Length: 390
Image (cartoon, rainbow, N blue to C red; front, side):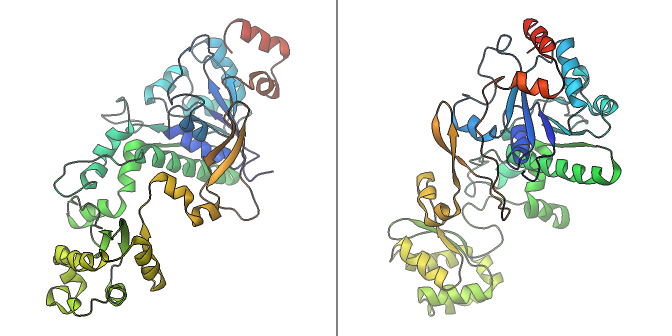
């Protein structure tokens, strides 16, 4: 029994943000039922890429799969029957689709007052942009991330991962868990919703509050930290490293490790404020010394001195790192078609509890078994199959 085993989740999500939310629940044992359209009426691969590819396998793991045509009255009736016994429904349709299908929160709560509905949209459930199609890169631009990413003067740059999708999924999962905790006191469910835009603005964090509190518009700082000096990327004799050394004590440690006591006597480098004003000179002093030895040498020296420092890896180097190996972040899963594959395990650890480790289901793989668990007879299932509802 895993921590969330007592909860049943009906998963209507697609692409990334919604599946990311559901994966947080599935990894810790929730009975997640992934609902897709029957292949007869949806012959494409669908959104999310090749179903046997790494992206799809990683995001849809630990679920069971059924098919159900929600565009038919029979399909909706079957879904509503499942809602009677479920705890959570998660969807990331455009806001108007829920009402059209009759699976909005009020409709679901009328069937099961304990139901928690988790919804993710592009821009929110109402407002002037509510019906716009949402996409991660659009939210990165509108949420401010692209304006602070990249080298100074380079122009807006997209982050290398779908930050808005992933964080919207995480925030939605947190909201669902909060609603389930509240339900233990009230006996009633709740509608939890977030959007790519809300998640992206929230993730701007201190960059956002630099504007809301002080009226500062953050700019691109490239590989330098926007406010903490010296923090950034530096060349060595054989590569590059990251150093994070803001504050007077860290500066003194950096000076000692590099042996630049004379250079540090420069009045322009005397205080945090002056080093910030003279960032280019500060970095140049460090850079001149760092180029005299290897990345491994300096990473070792700085960490011995208690200065945060690390290499800059390509992905193959990430998983070759001894600490990453020790943490077991490459997570072997046995797949019936692909054999043993390596996914990325959940990043949190609950002592004494191992997360679920089940491969992504085939479309409709568990239809008959799941519907049977929800009280459908063999004859009812056969009739739904004959009508291409499942």
